Image 1 (cartoon, rainbow over the protein chains, first blue to last red):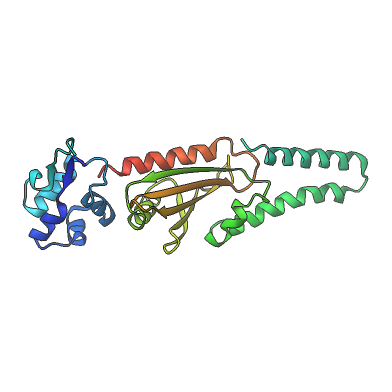
Image 2 (image 1 turned 90 degrees about the vertical axis):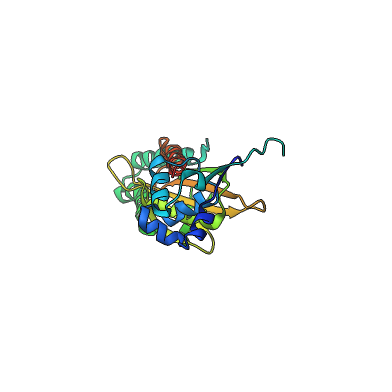
Length: 71
Length: 167
């Protein structure tokens, strides 16, 4: 997968549980878990903005591009 | 298309006509109508329990039309189970019953002027590659033809599912 979601890394850095983040940003725990596993189809700017705000980070801290074409 | 339910209904109707024509006993022809109405009442009473899944999906139950579809998802079975529950709760379908252990979900559409409603059985199966197989069966509660409602239920379900993956 080319785009990796590093939500679990940021959550660990901020010592925050998925449940807490869910309550803050209003996205269900199930959807955050799917996002965390990079199984979502797309992410809304509004969701990304809310996550960045809650975790005090940049979009680049959450999303990472890995070029896996050579593998 | 499975023509057996339609054929069964036609035989039923012809039988009713023959009995009404040749018999002077009105109760006899009435009895022919009592059987399907009785079945409908039973189906409506037991529709909301997963335990009765075999009855609705059984090939013996000739008066119902069923459509089965299978699809696959990358999401693990446990997580997908909760995802689908959440999806159903926020969709046009009604959640009737669920079995977390067996990863089974029963939902359906409600009764209205056009339909008695349909039951939808969703069965998840975890695969070795961590993906999940989703088996979707939509069945009428009464009637040998769903008038494409079974097919439309699946289309609506898949559309909602795909849309819900945009988080």
